[in-house]
Length: 433
Ligand SMILES: Cc1ncc(COP(=O)(O)O)c(C=O)c1O
Image 1: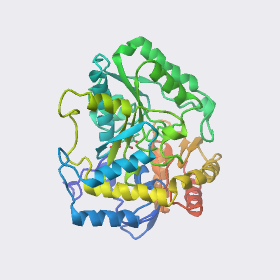
Image 2: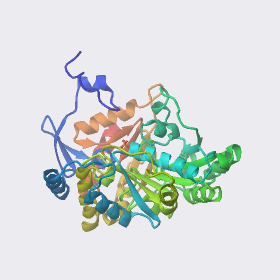
Image 3: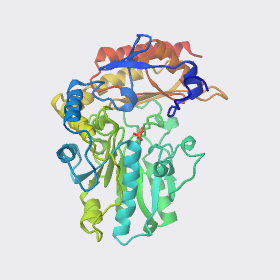
Image 4: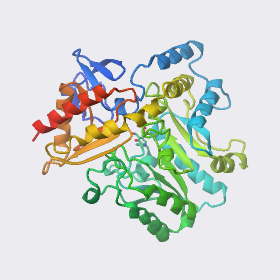
């Protein structure tokens, strides 16, 4: 065993990493400092999560204060006041009608919880045959068994079984018609019609829910074309199918509105969240359920414990304290409005890379964007990896997704810092064959 092999890292090329580990030792705002003492400008908010930047003083203070008072409280049959306060804070940002908050510890757990809610809801209505859940190709819903079953990224599922009854609508990416669109692309709303085809094939009496990322993030930033989500919403409603919006990336302001549901004027039945909820300070997720889902599962339940599901760390006091401070900071520092005001600048900057070497598409919305490069023949992902390494050496952190470079900076980033990120990426792309 080599000396680092005691550690088995998640979603990492462990052998490469161990040969040349990149170690962060400190962070402040939008910068990391690595072990060599170099500052790294963060273009991806850690991993789409540190929306306030890192080590925000109000969040740090809240965690420290709570840790001294009580860092754990049993989650089942016992409560504490911060979980209620946080649920109220989340409700205050959520779309109307989404009023009930269930706590988890991650995006994957939020997805599992939401899928169970959908099945429990249909069962409670006496519609137990409604047990298929529809997902979409090229979608990411975390790594647990429900999430990979409804997810649409083959590498995440090829070694494991599908444990849920699922089927998938097609991907929304359409580079032939939509390459280099600014914001929402023009073409492709008809792709929503595949949902009706799937319903016709399986029967709406057998389908519980559709889960969808309003913006597919981890697949490489796929943005829904004009009118697509509205059609999806209508087909779900017409066929008595619950609509679950997976807002693990988009929730809490990344598109310049509290949720993507606000941006696209959609009324989902359930929203899943994590990441931006605590700005990455503590592991936490939340599922936000509509009145009708809560009413059916909880208030009409025939068993004392209405929903047989939960985690030891559901509503953990330290995570609650971090999330309350985070949401207050979003509000007090007007950071969601800041995303909206930075969107045009971000768009101009990212599209200025259009003529760089090998760039075949650029996509953006809110403070999310992607620069897609053509893959090398027989070596998909190598070009993206090289660009990532070179940007890192020049002090900028990006996220390579095969040969797509994804960006999702913190809401506090300045225009100068954004320009610096794009200048470095531009320079690097043009040096890589
Ligand atoms: C849309 C979506 N759902 C779920 C997840 C899983 O979240 P986690 O890694 O916190 O389990 C992610 C993570 O990127 C995500 O983007």
